Length: 212
Image (cartoon, rainbow, N blue to C red; front, side):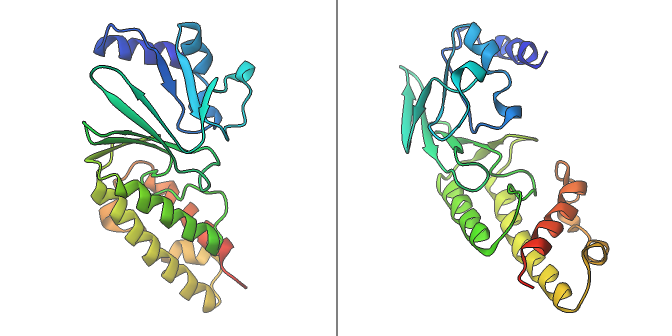
């Protein structure tokens, strides 16, 4: 299964025991392997707002705003950036390596929400600004390849452009399907991971959140 594949990959990198497994959030596709790692002695760590019982794979060690896991050679800082994608979003920041594990907060073009109201968009920008504020050289995403800061900045610019396009066309009386047909993905983002289905979904979210 997936847990065995992950453990095999880890074993290719290190022969050290796995002491901790940190969940970036509590969605099923991100915690499904928790029991397998726990069975091998790992302590599962996550935000206190991950509402999954331990018996169902939830974390046994939780934190509220910030937590540090450190040994003689490496420091990992856990920062709460919840409230947009999920209540319990965690970013794991490795300051020495300048690497941030960002979970699903950046999804290669995907709006990480199920609905988009003006308040949601403002909160999303605040979270992404904090994500960029770490000054990471690489962001390890929850789905897809690692990203660089310029990818995240390009996505923010894309959201501004897309919001204005969709709002203008809706004011002109165009329906959702017509707008999706009229607004193609930007050429420089077409090769992004899964962007062929994320772009029309983004249009639908923006369209649904615009005032009548």
